[in-house]
Amino acid sequence: MRDQHAGDVISLAHLVDAGALKGPAGDRLAADLRAWDRAFKDLFTRSLALLATLQPSDPGVQR
Image (tube, rainbow, N blue to C red; front, side):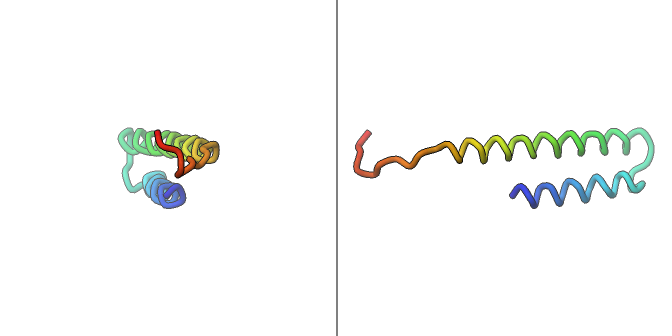
């Protein structure tokens, strides 16, 4: 999922940077895409780190 996101967002950012959307709107979109990419990479990294710290529960223990 992380790799798919990175590929999609980076491809879109490259299109915008290459002139697919020109002017201030394109500049804002490119900046937003880069910020979104950073935020999602951080989210994926933190999520994976949290999952790595989880311990399996004992199926014989009733809670």
